[in-house]
Length: 276
Image (cartoon, rainbow, N blue to C red; front, side, top):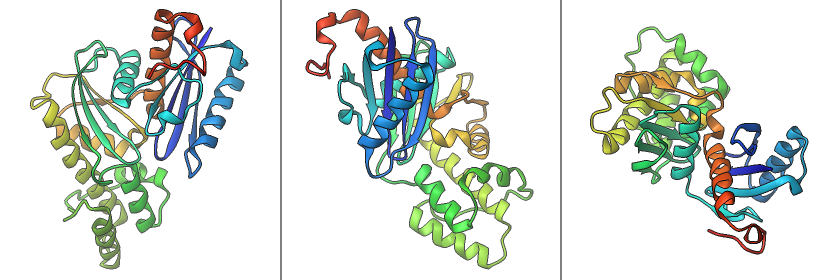
């Protein structure tokens, strides 16, 4: 039997399939776009096809993320806080602080070292420092989003600062810096350090002193080594990143599906009888 976790975010829909032992079997990340139902269907089809199994082989499905209520036939819809905590504990056991930066929000989660949430803080009032923010900055710089980390590594002076983290104002400031002849690599580094400063304030709300704690990062922004490095510098510690940071929430959802299926009578696990 297999268990599916689906994480529907603002930028991507992620799906992870685990086997009866909880081992990841396949995963998929597709753009959410304007039609999240289509994204859910595509991600679901891809993980099943990659594993070579059919819908009938699924023991249970758990959804998470902004669009979690859109997943049909789910056993449960679980918050992304809980799912990210469970997922990161499976990938990086002993994690005590998790920084999750997604498409439109940032989270800092304090864990007990066993995948259980002790406290969390969210920045969901503004897109500053999120994937959307970096997308806007990449457009202003006329570079590919995936190149930001490479450009950051080329920065030398690393003393340029931005006066605003508001996406609109920061974009205007970046355009002005380009017009003044500022080096693109230095601008990118300044953007990453600004994100790190904002993240530091978020982390301090759940862990005032992160010294000695194992810190990890999830979410699509964790694929940017410049941001990871800047956050590590701000926190004064190494930030660990799992191989597929985008799928941490979906993995946690899949593992929760496995656990809850074991504790739920089989006749209740159906599209008609959901437990939310």
